[in-house]
Amino acid sequence: MSRRLQRWVSHSLRKAGAAVALAHLILVCLAGLGWAQNPVAPQAAPIAFPSSAHPVAAPANRAGERYVIAKDDVLDVEVVGVQELSREYRVDGDGMIIFPMLERPVAAAGLTLRQFSQALRKELLDAGLFTDPQITVAVKSSPWNTVVLSGAAKKPGVYPVYGHTTLLELLTQAEGLSDDAGSTAIITRAEPREVQSSESALPAENALGSRTLKVDVGRLWQNGDASLNVDLYPGDRVTVQRAGIVYVLGAVNKAGGFVLSSDQEPMTVLRALALAGNFTREAKPAQAVIIRKTASSAAGKQEVRVNLKKVLSNQASDPTLMASDILYVPESGTKRTLDTVVNSAVYTTLWRLPY
Image 1 (tube, rainbow, N blue to C red):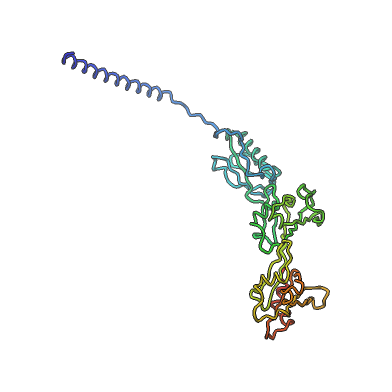
Image 2 (cartoon, rainbow, N blue to C red):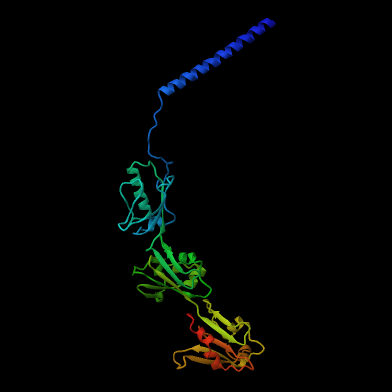
C-alpha cells in the first residue's frame, strides 16, 4: 500500500470515529429529554423487612411461652429497624399498652410474651404501617413475679421469675451457697399449689405442710440431684438455713467459730481442736470443758468435762460437738475461772448469734 493511500485511510477512520461519538452523544441527550418529560412517579409503600421463616421473633429462652404479662409490668419491645417504636412500655391498670402510630391500645395483660408479640404484629399489619414487622418482647421488670431468697446464699435478695424457674437456677443466679450454709432449704409457697412432678420425688418426711417444702439443698448444689430440683413460682420464699457453729476458745492457737459441715462426718472435740490449731504450751488440756446450751438447766447451760490428754491417747472417747457448743481449754496460771469465761460479754454474745 502506497504512503498516500495510507494517509487517506487514516484520515477516513478519524472522521468515522468522530461521527460515531457524535451519534452516541445525540442518543444520550434524546434519552435524557424523554426521561425529563416522563418522570417515574415515586410510590408510597409500607416499610418492608426481609422475610423470615419465623415472622415474630421469639423472646429469649422459655419465657416467651410461659411468662404471663401482668398489670404494671415493664416490657422491652423492639421492632427491628424502627427505632421510634423500640423502647420500654409499661402495662397500664387496664392491662393495655399504648403505642405510637396506633389508634388504639394493644391488650397485653393475660397474654404470654409470644402471644403479645403476635397481637402487636397483627395491629401493625392491620394499620398498614408494615409489611413484615419483626418483633421481640422481653420483660424488663415486674412487681409481681419475684422469688425471695434469704439465709445462707452468697447473694440473697429478690429475684425476678420471668418463666419456668427451678431452685437450682435460683441458686445459680445467687452465685451458690455461702460458706456457712447448712444442708436444708425451706421453700414457702405464696399460695397452695398441686404437687409438681419434681416435688413428688421428694421423700414424704420432707413435706412440712401444704405450703412448705424442705429440700436437701447441699446435695442439690453439690451433686445436681434432679429429684431435689423443685419448681419455683412467683411469690415463693426460699430460706437456706445456716449450718451450726462450734467455738473453740481459751489456750488454743486459732480461737474462733467453726462451721459444722453438711457432710456425714460429725464434728468431734479432736476435729475442732485441729481446726483451732491445737492447744498452746500454756494450756491445761486435762481440764478442758464443753459448754452446751440446754433448756433443762436453770442456768441455761451444761458443762461437760473433757480430758484432752486421754482423748489424744485413745484412753477416752472423742465426744461429738453440737451446734453452738463451746470447747474451752483453760490456760495454766490464769486467774480466770470457768464461770468468768462463760458469763463474759464476749462469750455470751456468741450464743446470741443466729445459728
